[in-house]
Image 1 (cartoon, helix red, strand yellow):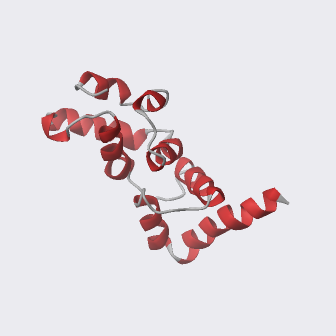
Image 2 (cartoon, rainbow, N blue to C red):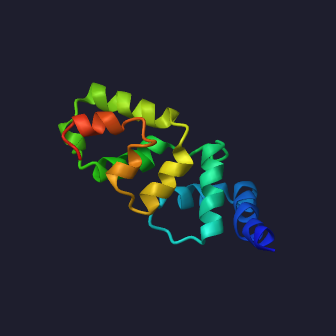
Length: 127
């Protein structure tokens, strides 16, 4: 019964949003502070991992939060380096995991396990 409840509260909602209100789904994914039920949060994360939210840009939503997590000041980074970091972020295969981590204020240490830019952030004076 729990799996059915998870489907109804998660995957089904995401599917309906993707089909009938893609702008609402995009807004939901871009707002890291929006309270969500655990099944919906997991479903959105899976959708991000699978690329089923095509308008989502990790570098625009997740990278600023990740830089805050690592205590990195974007203004102190050369534009060329920042562009490389953004490109790496947008190619990341752990977008759903990152999205959940940033929503839940994960510590830098936890993010080192999956963030492709973690090493660079640490080298830029971060944690």
